[in-house]
Image 1 (cartoon, rainbow, N blue to C red):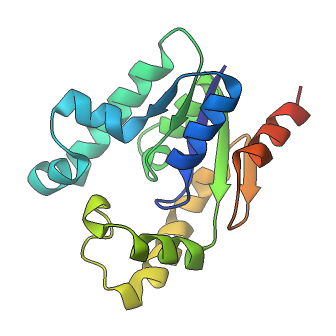
Image 2: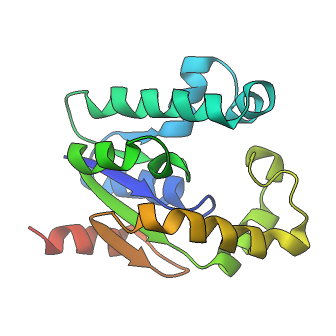
Image 3: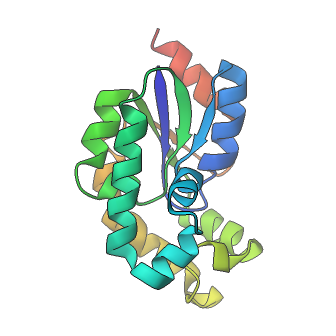
Length: 170
């Protein structure tokens, strides 16, 4: 089975994905890292040199390549992955999608504590405007995120919470 963690940047998809993959004894895939391998430059540089539309095309292509592979894995998608092209349909058909729904205030706190330059969509956002930017982004992306097979809500989600939801369906 393929598992896809979706949600806003800073929601914890990568951290939770690594733990979930370990618990399920599956490989972990970070979609942004796979894009960087393929492009041989960082996502930040892709955004800067080629722009977001180009990045989204590469992202969609890489997602589809992983979805067509044999075998199971846990993937942390980029925050915008489900919102472009037919990516959410691709994700839903390829496996189980889990929306990690963390509050805008908690995400703002996390991003302020991290290196903003690693997050291209937030690199030019002043810290006082961070929560508003995240709330706006959430409002735009929520229709896509709500299509996930499962939603897990909270500011301190752990891999055990995700496992119990997944085990509850079997």
